[in-house]
Image 1 (spheres, rainbow, N blue to C red):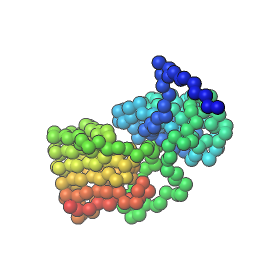
Image 2 (cartoon, rainbow, N blue to C red; image 1 turned 90 degrees about the horizontal axis):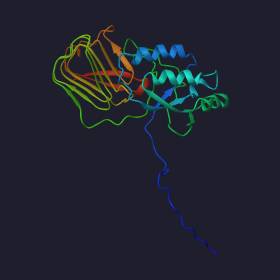
Image 3 (cartoon, rainbow, N blue to C red; image 1 turned 180 degrees about the horizontal axis):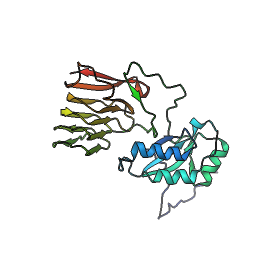
Length: 254
């Protein structure tokens, strides 16, 4: 016999599954003092890089070794406007400690790339690569670009969060342009240009006169300390990343 019971939905709430966009931090060391220094060096001069983004801490690079002071880690990350909500990839003890600190188990929350292979060596000054402190989930780039129509002077910084940036005037030495998407400079580029700032390896940099102090795409960078080739220096050029986050910057005259 089938019995049907009348149901009543609560008037004050509903519980549904949800998909959240998360930033992922691959923790490679339990030395939180060193982590604090690296975060300050990477994001200290970009206070609005994160906007209370939810974050999952991926412990898999630690391979279960070491104790993590999660209370201190959470405080450190919140200082950079990151909101840790979950932990994944840790040993049983690490996951237990994370739970005691109020962090959820997030084994299936987000998939993050692993970097078990050694970093490739620099090739004849072709590229220099820093170690990303906070690899992030794929970003959705807005269709609307940020347009800057005034010169950027030394000390000025522009960050196009979640979109491209178009600059119609000179970017002077000491100025800095940062974008999660592409960077277009229709004037001399003499400062720093950082495209794909949140890990978008498809981002590119375009300039009608390339004379930068630094160019970077998805963490792979090159500085003026390594002279730029004569066929692109001071000329219309595009910069793209070949080979993903472990690849090299390619400069092509337009």
